[in-house]
Length: 353
Image 1 (cartoon, helix red, strand yellow):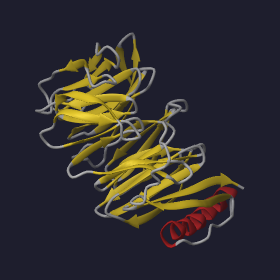
Image 2 (cartoon, rainbow, N blue to C red; image 1 turned 45 degrees about the horizontal axis):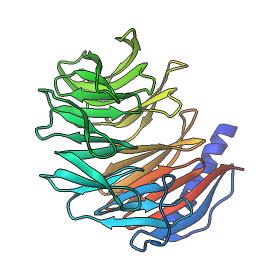
Image 3 (cartoon, rainbow, N blue to C red; image 1 turned 180 degrees about the vertical axis):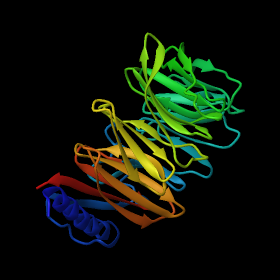
């Protein structure tokens, strides 16, 4: 048996034990990769005397949100009756007809009021509101004051933001890129190639050099474009054999060497440096993606079944495990995977032998 196959076998065996630990408190298995259980906590029992910090992680499970520390302390806990938005910096509770929305820091202290009507979204320390009608959005500062607004005719169907650039995709197949701080329009283009253009997912690299998207119906395709002198040049594209009819995940890795995209029945990974494409069968919707030092974790969902896919940095699927839950999330730090399942959060350290 090859070394690679042995490693994959060891990881599969380790994952089986990991599942038992997370949900049945079994013991870890030491092989090529070690999965070392750290702790498991119940989110309904917060450690209120602990002060939250920007290094803490956030969770949203069902009608509950809050923050927890890497050593397993619930530092803030809040139930909400309707809707909520949260990031590692802020959270807000709101209703369907929300207007002038209060938002809070990780300790539950009110920071300001978002002076708008609509649906708030926090991306790290950036505050956006999708305005009524679904065609326009605005950015707000740390006090909730309007910084800039973009109005459009076509509905927004995809959105991505980083510290430098904000990209919006629309039902008419257009992508617009804005300066995150000023709101100035940097670029507008259409990936095209389909009979019915619609942007289903997109992401933009931090330096603004690359834009990735999955778009269209009837010849749906993934497109990676390189921006040169504010002009997009398609450097890779891939037509889908079967098509999605929903929004989907498109994601640049933290080192921006790879771009992930969720297509019907799979996840595609394109390496910009090697110009190689990898596909992994996935029969669920990818709802989140997280990275540690050695792995990329994908959380997928179909009905009440969740699956965590573990992908090595070489873009090889090393294993997966599934569980049933009403609601779930994943997060990751340098060498640790955090799994939220209904009212529990588990921490497991991952390291090589």
